[in-house]
Length: 263
Length: 242
Picture 1: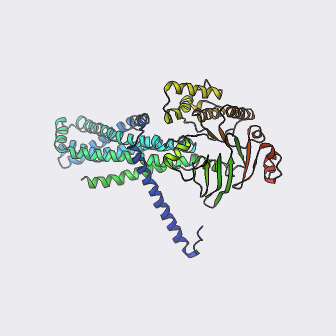
Picture 2 (picture 1 turned 30 degrees about the vertical axis):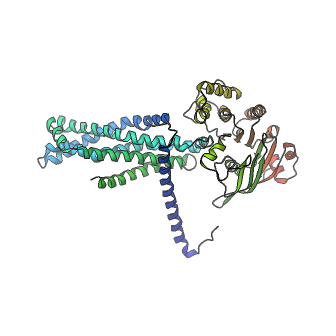
């Protein structure tokens, strides 16, 4: 046991202890993903758990993703049309909506929606399993709980996030079409024709890499927070909130970083 | 034989286990008694290998499990079953699937064999009809019995029970105790149980150990413990307030 520091140095010691705690937490957070990554490539593979997670994360998020995608596209169509009309450039509505959605808004908004719906639920589910000793039960059966709970979730994130994002983009572009073409009178040929001219594979790939990495981030944070939940219902509630907040912040930070690198 | 030597565990400033020594002979039912918050569940988690001590050792049949990890620890864990205080049944699976789970995941048993063994395990805990129900649909006593069936189904050499009767009415307490005794006579596993149920545990225990302030203060056959002159043991057995 270490001796207590002199009174004058206590604030410094407190800052030091806090810094060490943060570094330790970051280390645990990183090694958690490392452990999961190692289990991804080593058998046995839990196919049923993987399919269950795809349903849980992907299929169950479909409605909210389609709904937000449609309205995002419609809002974009409306706002961008009026902005472009000031310069007499309404013809570029199609590419403006498509590029905004494919490169930026699709992956980010879709990830934020899935974080709110599936990420929070996943943290709560794993957190409850932790406090009701179900995770300990797996461990004492000589089974690795990470293989059953974390690996299928991360793989499901990798598979479902790009697919959900693609749907978000398509529905969003159609929402922009409804407003720009059907409501405001732009020709359909102009809307889609200009889109074909300006949107290329690099834009699609940027959206793809973003959504794929968001899938890993959201599932990583959700499962980590569930695994390291505090005590009782309050602990689960706190972990769920932290999971949503941390995922959202990491999505936005990573979006900027990846956007800069893939530019 | 399960043995703990000099087991010490500290959480922050709270020293929960203080150089604790303990023995559970092979094939016997050893029951650990002690006051709430006295470290019994923490001690049990050390025996199971869910926690690592700050100092001391835990050995099972001469194999020191304290520093084991990975596949070596998994090999030891395959030899035992655990009944948790809450039952720890997987709430997304039916009772039948819960009992079948260890067989499906840790053995190469065929579907027919799994079906036979799960049916037999549920039969032994007198719950043959609850297989299709989910844990949330059955009573607390039934959940404990399903948990016992799950621990029993892989025919372990050792079973750890963490307060298997907590929160149950006296009739159910006796039912569970009789069940454990009956299963023990049939299967002759080594059992280590944490319990508060005084005096009921004296009827099923081969050996009782009293844990107080992080140490085993006295251990022996039930008759010897009931006749103990140790004031801590006497006070606990008689339920005398502080």
